[in-house]
Length: 219
Image (cartoon, rainbow, N blue to C red; front, side, top):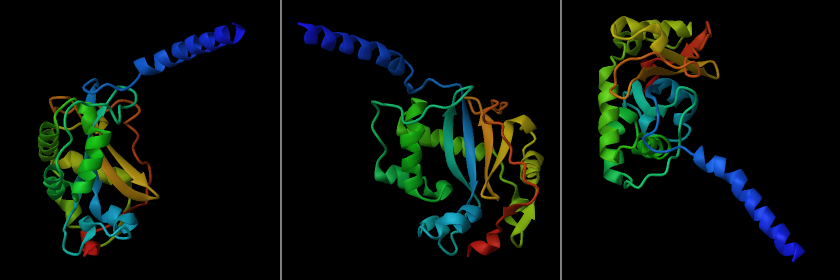
């Protein structure tokens, strides 16, 4: 009898402890805004893509800013790997995103981690991602840089603001990785209108001599 009572008490305690965790789980469709993440392909290829043999980095591929992803965000933190009853995209659907994402495998990864959390079907999520990507002008000047440069990361943000008058400085952030320009991130409402980034997203790279790989070094 004593063992039975202990076992029952432990079962009740475990249930009580796990209940808040279950309630806090990320739910598809419940989020506050999007982050449009644009990766500078020449930098990624120089850092790791070529070593991985990615088709994104093949000679003549010609990628500049590519869509890393369209990420649902909370005002603090973000959901990921949400459960979804909607079907996953086909291989053809992910492959069709390679023209703006570099590879279909990235599209598949982004769907699993972020797309399911949007609450949208895969076709609708990828269509929205295309709309978001098209809504932001990528600075032509950066594609014309003739050689690798070291520059303040703020220069990249200024270039985006120059060609996108609809954006404000607190809605754009530039990230670095290992001293290299990595991404430009733009915060958007669920309707893809520009909005300020939340505090945990608004963390600009402050490097004054970040490496910016040129397009000419990509071939």
